[in-house]
Amino acid sequence: MMAVKKGSAADIQKALLDPTYPRTIRIVMNRGLSIEKYTAAIVEALEPRMKGEELEKLEEFKKLNPSVDLVEGAEIEMTIRGDTLLYKNAVGGVGSLQSQRFMEALCDVYYGEDPASPTHKESVLEGVRKL
Image (cartoon, rainbow, N blue to C red; front, side, top):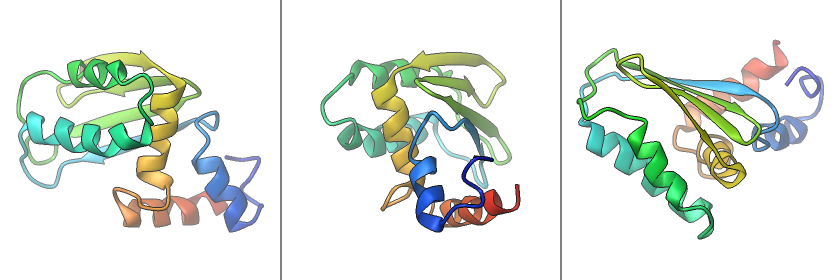
C-alpha cells in the first residue's frame, strides 16, 4: 500500500482489490453469533465472486473455524498475501488457504463496489493515505 498511498482514490481502490498488496482484516464481534451463521455469511458473499472456480476452497475456509460459537469481543484475523490467506480463528487457532480466486473474491467482499462493511472500506481508504 505504501506504493499507492500518494495516488488517486482510484489507484488506492484498485490496489485494495489486488491481493498482491498484503493486508490484514481484523474482525471483532460486537455480539455473539453462531459459527454457522458467520461462515454462511462469508461463503454466501464469496461464492458468486468466485465465478464458479475453485469452489472447494469455500469448504476449506469453513474448516478453518472450530465448531464453537462466537462470543462478543471474539477476534478473527484474515491476512491476505497474494494467493494465500493466513487465518487466525476466534479461539486462536491458525491455518492457511491457498487460492488466487479466493483471495480476489475476499478482496472484493471487503473493498469492491458492494462491500460487506462500507464503513470498513471507507476507513481503510482514508487510512491508506495516512501511512
